[in-house]
Image (cartoon, rainbow, N blue to C red; front, top):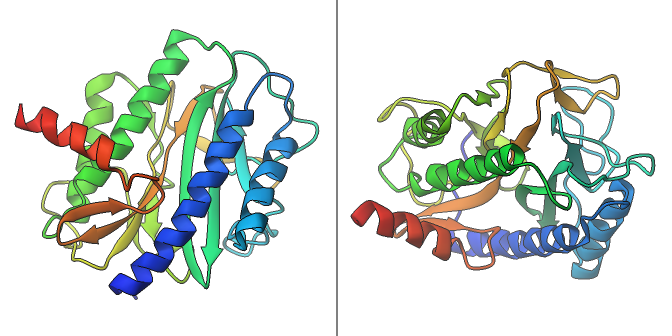
Length: 271
């Protein structure tokens, strides 16, 4: 069932989105050589705790898997998503790391992710991150009333394809979100314009492109969670939760509701 939200429910999801944004900002500020992924997890957990929010990651089960043990996912280099924080995983200069975090406020969920470099990184890795983030915003910008899920997927995929020979994960994508972290519909990072579910105000979605420098194939490691590239190529992952409104997409996990990035895209399109 696809869940449409009232303005009041979207406002509650905005509260959860601001907690997620604060947690991700705190983690981003702490990323440095010598820091462990467990330390980053503790930082995010403290932000959620101080805000009176709950983690929607910790204890989560996917398809009967073992419960996820942490507040964030911390995926390094060739790890695409769902990397488990550990005191044994220490960041090194030149690494890239993807951080995914979610929060629940009064039963309403929000979810977002980013990829960042650890110290100075290679131009190739920096460009990978840049392309993935831009693809995210182009997908969100396509999420207007009357558009379709195919329009979102097409916006993500066509931009990535235009920027080089990047692999794009097909097994994972975005999702509906609301009273559960994962709801219908599935939001693929590929599609055809005008195809699929038509978007209406009240629909809240998480868009999350995942791209890699090499082949698109991935596998799940023995910890039952960490998804990594088969060929060892590095990957990037970005995500935001946004609401479809009569005025266009409203990004609930961005402090400015996405105004700066969406406005920049609109200005470039008009020019």
